[in-house]
Image (cartoon, rainbow, N blue to C red; front, side, top):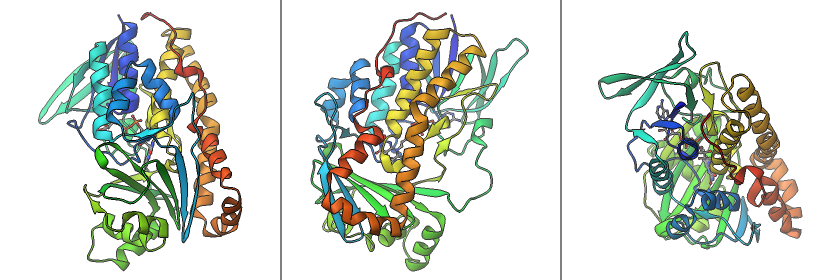
Length: 396
Ligand SMILES: Cc1cc2nc3c(=O)[nH]c(=O)nc-3n(C[C@H](O)[C@H](O)[C@H](O)COP(=O)(O)OP(=O)(O)OC[C@H]3O[C@@H](n4cnc5c(N)ncnc54)[C@H](O)[C@@H]3O)c2cc1C
């Protein structure tokens, strides 16, 4: 039997663990955080993700737990609010679910499929030995132990600070670096059926109603704007000062939170550098954000993470566990699925962060709100995907 170590129990790691365990692989998943844990994320799941949940046998549970149907999309820019229909797929619209609930649901599914979980514990190193086996060190408190597997998969997200070699890629700060923030509100006046996208100077954001009456609000902001915000609101926390800075520049946001109460802490994450990261570095393979991510403005990262796990699994089914054939097939399929999505998200991010572009485009969107719907279709909010269908396989 082939042994697989999966590093991280986010959407990518837990989905891959469930798929491979079902296929007969011996899977161990190591997660450094104790669950349930919150996460910087907009928490919106597009219709293609719902198709994935259906195939994982989780759709009914997801629909029971998630927030209301999101059938409309709105764009907030300065004093302008434009609304349009959100595209659907197969008669379904997206929903939002807090990450503390979603990630537990996916991990429980992996456990039910037969995956073993070590949590809370971090993988701090992984090396290939002379026999081609991967020797990984797992750290939990003051204890360390070694685990030896045939395959190791980095599903640790991209921005996580960790000791593993595949997490040491940040390098020096760049002006384009984004820092992300997230919180929940209660009592927001954002309509329950609407996902709002915020075009901000030096950033972008998203707001949506998720489960249990929480409104999820998250945004990314460039370092220079964050520094300006801190100067403007010196007595506030970093998250609060960034929030006040963008709120004063975005009427749609200001209206939506007037009278609302923050129901969670400000969480932050950074540095965020959307784009392709790595597929295989000679020791570990990457799935989810570790492999690559789109700008969060298109709210598609969870779907991409889950799909990349499916592409990994489908590549194993297709060519079997034979390096470098498998590495080649996985990278080929990944690029086919996500290259254009990443480029498109970059374009949308550049446009929404450019005040001049937004001022020029606003009148067109006001005249033709269906352009927003078209943009959401391009962002994958309704696209079909062959990796949403399962083949059958046994461990090779
Ligand atoms: C501001 C913002 C808003 C967003 N909004 C949305 C949205 O609305 N919809 C959407 O689909 N996507 C959104 N995204 C993107 C989405 O959050 C990510 O794409 C998604 O979380 C990636 O999943 P993942 O499984 O690859 O990694 P993660 O979710 O980051 O999970 C990685 C896991 O690995 C664990 N880990 C890390 N290092 C180690 C280690 N060494 N050992 C063991 N465990 C480890 C971590 O604790 C974590 O649990 C947003 C992102 C941002 C920044």
